[in-house]
Length: 46
Image 1 (cartoon, rainbow, N blue to C red):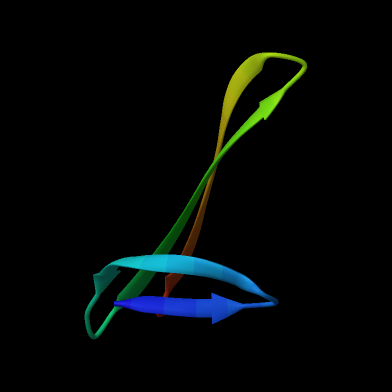
Image 2: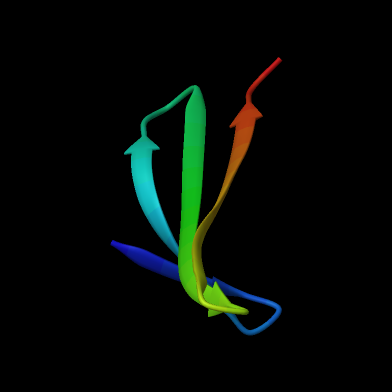
């Protein structure tokens, strides 16, 4: 599953009754160097 937040497309890596996890990975090149940007959002029911 995918979810779009503020124009960014996140992969839903976990979704159950108590938790949802979203991950984002972007690969880009800057001045000849390759970079990988990763981000994870976790929401847990309290």
